[in-house]
Amino acid sequence: MNELTSHRIHCPYCGEAITVLVDCSVDEQHYIEDCQVCCRPINFDVSVDPDGDASVVVSHENE
Image 1 (tube, rainbow, N blue to C red):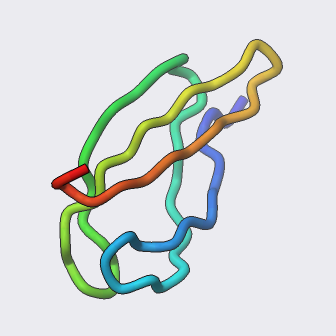
Image 2 (image 1 turned 90 degrees about the vertical axis):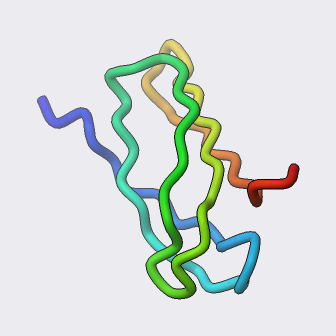
């Protein structure tokens, strides 16, 4: 079973819509990934509910 799912987010810096892969095998994650367009660091807060659906919240480094 593939635990990676794609999610479309908007960069908190440049506003571009980008697609990221999220690992749904971990219930809660906090990490930083650079924007594919402007290369600025995006903070990711990911939580996965019991049904396996991921909620992805992004913010810039000063939030």
